[in-house]
Image 1 (cartoon, one colour):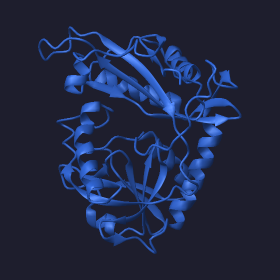
Image 2 (image 1 turned 30 degrees about the horizontal axis):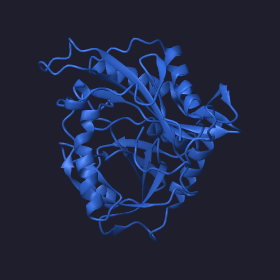
Image 3 (image 1 turned 180 degrees about the horizontal axis):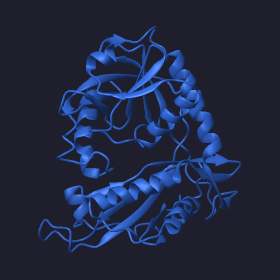
Image 4 (image 1 turned 60 degrees about the vertical axis):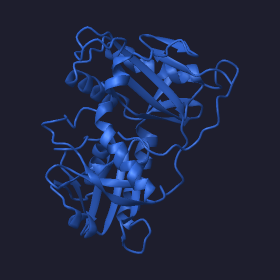
Length: 316
């Protein structure tokens, strides 16, 4: 199998030529920002969903953490398709990440060089209907927004979420709902949360959670369908009292929640409104992704690439 290719600091690298060293600042301190995007296959052509919003958020996150990104928008757009082409991928997950490189002398970032890498790997669509998951209530809390800006998709902010996810899966759950520092529902460990109540949608405010791009898409689609959507401070009691619950993320799309702790929603199957919105979202993704004329047909370098596999997790 050919070595995977990555876009690193302005050009495509293969094999290990773009690997950072063990003294990379971002590795030791979690000082990096990233995104997660989905690419879909349209007759052999790669089409990326919501590419521009993801680039905009990457730049915003980098500005929040004072990580300079020296490439213009056109270069960043092209780079995402270049890494897909270099790996022979159309159905894929794409991970751009900006970070500070070598140097561990001192805690400041001013003397460190910033790097930008874009990786891609095979990613298959979930089974039709999106399946369903059981959630725990995490004992870990999202930090106050005065401590850690929730709107920046920063690697370091995911440490608490990964601890909560590990603890939930150890108890047999797929994920966990996290509360914020005021005991309000914030998000799942890597997905946004929606409640269905009386035919409308409720979702937490973005005070202490990442305002996901998929979240925004679902809100827009729901309102276009005449469904009332409100952002509110929600409690665990609100969650348990909901008619339906679902999660959203780039990787999962719309993911029905069947139960939270020992509370089962309805008959334990995806609810009617959740299923309706899942269909709207899947259709929207297939008709609003941005195709690339630069890459179509069989994979380059004489390989079709590794078989696509479904890898759970990830959020946008």
